[in-house]
View 1 (cartoon, rainbow, N blue to C red):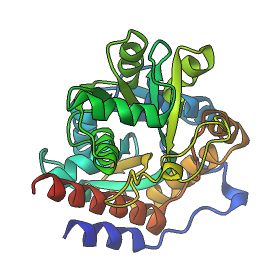
View 2: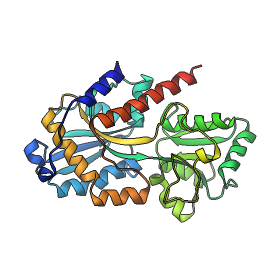
View 3: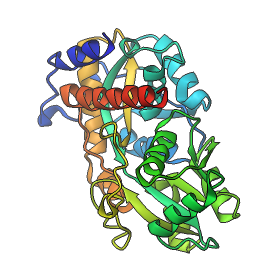
Length: 323
């Protein structure tokens, strides 16, 4: 039922404002002041995405206030979005975290409590180790995991059952290894633990750790995506080594803007146009290129299908874990 609702919602035809009206969002009822609730701590990749939108919104006549409400894998922030008035003044950033929470049925959140607006980013994941680690390659990491006989540590942002945990599980299962999963509240903690030698292997977004990679404090050993990254051309993909990191379906982390259910169609169209205008701007695209994430601004049926694909992947992964 959830997926049928999700796909049906995406089929609702909402025409975007034509390019000639792109700057006149006020006529579509878009509020001048907008609160964007981010369910993660300040300084992380998701928070930085929101803050990079601020000057772009301001240039278009809108004040974007970013409010960080970390906790519960973004459940606290998105619960507040779901309870807000559908007037366009309170929006949120959803991600694979929200999709996994709904798929697990561990929180009282449902897809029909939200209106999906625009995808802001889609991120590949990379496996990294600390600079002091003896591990230099993916093959050496696999050997260390096997030799550890379940005592090798690997971590990501988010508790068990979230995308980072499931992806590490898939990699370990593909190579016949085991590990101890260590959950962290954010990628900065993952990076710090790796640099301190307290964690064997980390799974992060490239944008979370490019500073430490460039400084030599972290060493990337594999990309869990469909192709090598232009920013890390010498780092192979797991697929090149015959490892399927997505056995339950293609699940790449993404961040997308949502509004409370009940948002009027004209206002939804105005908000979609505003977000797309900012995300597809040369400034935002330049940042996306430098930090290795895709900023395609998809919306409507295409975004609904992407969410549904991840939802199906999470359900399949959870069912496999229970066997």
